[in-house]
Amino acid sequence: MALVEVKVPDIGDFEDVAVIELLAKPGDTIKAEQSLLTVESDKASMEIPSSHAGVLKEVRVKLGDKVKQGSVIAVIEAAGADVSQPPAAPAAAQAHAASPPPPPQPSPSGG
Image 1 (cartoon, rainbow, N blue to C red):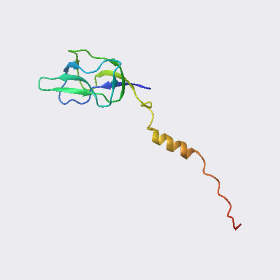
Image 2: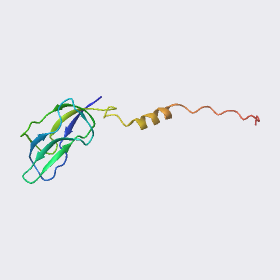
Image 3: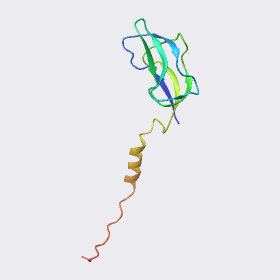
Image 4: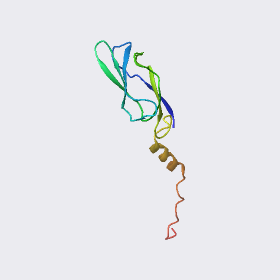
């Protein structure tokens, strides 16, 4: 399992927005795209989703903190395979391709 930093995605033309609500806490099981917190600008409020599924290990912001695009807001222990590895299907295809093909069988007619 890999630890993944969850960052604030592109939230438009806002430099700093305030964290007004925390929607998850360390130890919670998180789904990909599940909202982790709510931020508010002078014009709108928006929920910030998780980029990965897994277990929330750490929340790096508090109520009232200011965040912007790229700010690390949480750390998740990603579910499934290591996120730095390619998906399982290509790995299985590589394993299959690595085995040499069987040698050709001689024709029963002998030629």
